[in-house]
Image (cartoon, rainbow, N blue to C red; front, side, top):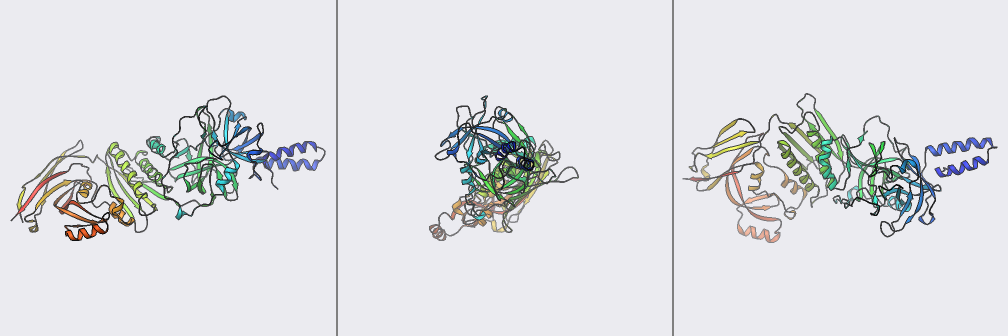
Amino acid sequence: MSLSVPSCFRVLRVFRAQLLRPLSIFAYLACFAGQLHAQPTPLATISLDDLRPGQRGQVWTVFRGTEPEPFDVEVTGVVRNALGPGKSLILCQLTDPRVQNMGAVAGMSGSPLYIEGKLAGALSYQIQRFETVRYAGFTPAADLAEVRDKPDLAPSTLPATPVAPNAPSPAPTSASSYSPLRPVFTLSGLSPVVADLFAPRFSALGLEVTALGGNSTGTSTPTATPSTLRAGSAVSVALATGDITLAGTGTVSRVDGARITAFGHPMLSLGNVELPMCAADIIAILPSSLQSFKIANTGNVIGTITQDRLSAVSGTLGSGPAMIAVEVSIAPSSPVARVLRFQVARQAQLTPSLIAAGVTQAIMGSNDGALAHGFRLTSNIQFSATQNLSARTLHAGPQAFAQGLNQFVQGLSQDLQNPYEKTFPSSISFTVEPLPANPAVTIDLFQLSRATVRAGDIVTATLAWRDYQGEAHREIITLPIEASWVGKNLDVILAPGAALDELTGRPSVIAAATLRSFDSYLAAMRDDRPRDGLVIAIVEKSTLFTDETASTPDVPGSIERIARAADEARFQTRAAVIPLYERHLLPGKLATLMVRRPLRVVD
């Protein structure tokens, strides 16, 4: 039979009464030393009805390293229905001098409270910040067990709903509502510049992020393992692991075999989830009158968090969940190439921002990648062996980078929240290539030699441009005139590839009802034209009849009417242009100008 820590104090009282029994001395000392060092899973819980004001208790948490230590509290009372019907809080005064100076600490979330050798609850709520006497709220043990016992869903049945951030609350005062000790999410592997850049994005998703923390994954730093994790141990729930880590650190409330319950309050209120459970090593506690918090190193993955509920988070020790593998390669100006590798949790709104943070770190957080001139970004999003999206873009300077970053986040969010198929990428790869010069150019002239031509004639287009803070250039482009164009009123268009895509019938926004499958969605999202330079094209005005992503020009009206009567959302007709000739110009440059010149072909 194992004894809880409070039981050992009762053992000492018996020990004092039996000083004349030498054999008992060693037995009781061994019991006390062993139980004090390794606090076990509680054998029983104490109900709210059995709690009385003035009862003494011990709360177990990690102050430094990985070993839990106790601190003393005194029960003040039970606040009934504090968080809603049937959801009460145990109110305790933090009497231990160490904790009285710092108050309830972010990172102590879930620290188990023992009264009379029984689990009473878990430290979870801050009551006030600036008063001289410190109090804290504890989630009752019965509520922890309720979360522990919730059935986990199979990965294939998990809802693909986006993150629903907790509603922002005003800064607590002595008269404010209860404030949960939300775990401070430690963002490691990012430079301070990148962390500051993404702080507003993470805040909008309900994440209070700090860069004060680290990541001990893959090092020899000792951290908790499944065999040593126990009530009072530090534990982290990660959203990203590897070279870049984002994890919230709290405390284990109870261990039931391989089942872990922690935090004593929600992380992001996501319900059924699949998030990595990681070991954690506490470096220090930073005291503050506003909000004290633990600085931690996030360790290796030791299990999977499957529940994120009002009263706790819970999961199972073992292998971690499926995640998205991200690799960012930087082609440096120095001979040494660098690669960032990390894994991202599969959450529809969090995933794009986390990946974008990694790409930004590769660009802004190194001595090789810089924004002074610009860079080329090549990406490949692999959904399955046959489903992928690839793109190649140029960026010049901080403003263009911020715009491209927003476009990437919005695009990937749209991919993950598509209405056709619940899906997440299996892997995403990026290659970042710094440019030797700013790729932006200014177009000075675009002119045709003739506006009316005959079949077989030679028509030239003159294009003049200036490099960014550089030289002027001129190019003469020869345009062929086909005999089949006789009698047609055409246009010569000079435009970026994306603009020409839209002119030729690809809408900038695709209505969900026009497509029928994820494969059709990917086909519609693929970039058919390069995203650098300009495209010169000879085009003919037409009417396109579209069936999902397939377009047919000038379909007879009878066929169009029959198809649209069958499914008006799927079959669409729109005005567009058909390219008869096109050519890619100024590769490796960035230009935004679009010019249209008329061209008439006669006999």
